[in-house]
Length: 90
Image (cartoon, rainbow, N blue to C red; front, side):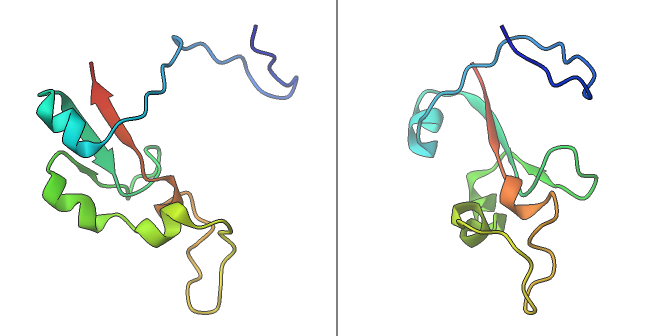
């Protein structure tokens, strides 16, 4: 059973299944998919369904170990680029 901290409201959602795959396998299987360049809740996040748009993801940020803002990049801690994700419809 999911233990919810007392300060948080209860969260009701169907169980999620996390699967590991590749873009090639998803396309070969003919599955519908979308991916984002940031966190899905952020209004400025863009969603894509064309693999040619994968270049729009900040891959350095996705694979980074630390996301602290730097003088060169003051947007590293936002709910944006580090939360890029993909969803596949099975």
